[in-house]
Length: 171
Image (cartoon, rainbow, N blue to C red; front, side):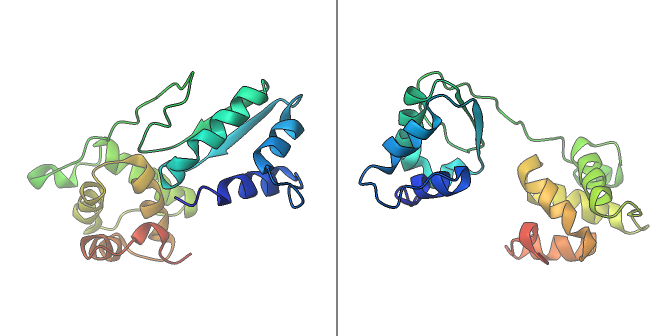
């Protein structure tokens, strides 16, 4: 929730010098005034207090569009919310079914980092459990699956089960 850092990060990303300014948001807005640009903000819920900064930029720069991922609404004028629903998660006896959406995504993402990834005979229950541990949510599932590059599905399950953030392990 470090709101003062948000304008600095946006300015640095866009190559806008705000070092000598007492109002970095105004400098950024001026630099974007005639630009056509898409600003992508991931995990915006961590800096939700900075929504007013984004709102000010959107009002000043008509060519600015913002795509933000967030667990919370930014409450900005013109905001359009697209819910990303949880995927189907296998439970109990159906845990080894490969056609469950979350399991399918897990395997696809594992193959994206290792094209030779093929679940071993004992992996399907662990993969299904991994999907359940992140509630079938794609933003959590995808990076967890990518860890198959360095961890087995069982190791990922153990880490997620202990509360260790397996989504960032090994990076």
